[in-house]
Image (cartoon, rainbow, N blue to C red):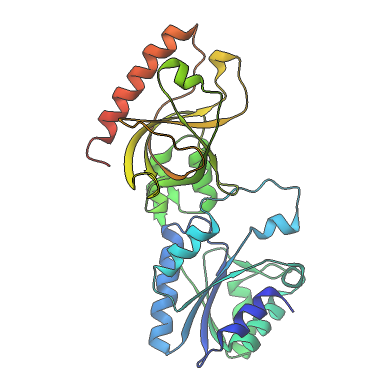
Length: 312
């Protein structure tokens, strides 16, 4: 029995269901459009609305060697989906039992486990190992008393909204476009871990952040960010000039996220923080020595204050 069937059986539904299934990576504005359609259509038809989110990307199961990153943690995704007001959010493993199903078998399984009457899909969705699209699947679904609703794509000034498009924006350092497609600033949850204390030696002590899970990290460079510090420290939001990169001025090294928190003194080691990316200030540069680097870091801090004025 697949994890999906177990989770659906555990709901003990008292009425038929409207269902949507996906990873919902980032829960961007296109996902929100789909989820709101699910809720509205279910309410109109007297159905229970169920959003099923895979814990991991299906392609990670299909091809374990493929690199996979995420735009939100599983906890973030679940919370954002639940905030749309759907009746149930299920976290489900994409396992071999699901992988082996054809589109027709997948529909039949949802019909048996949840008495599904409506399946809501996003644009370009394909189901089953035979990769059937919504148009091809509609007649087959109709024979089983299931209606398929395909929600239109959401568009942004930069093009069609998708998780892949958001990842491309982040890879280019374009955190403003990513925020427009997400409907909120891109955020990285992480834990503050010990670093090489280089920033402290330069007069700019930083919080070195290890991202939770396998979150996508924006392009190397300097960013104006807002850091959310947990209640165990001061329950505060502060401006931060954040560097992502390998520190080429000092010969390079492991890629790190280092946040210099403005107007803050304290020990954050071991604490969980959340970093919101507002704007990329510049790319990472190799300087000819420490003094030019310190001059530029002071400029970065001043520009961070300017960019974030009124944004914290």
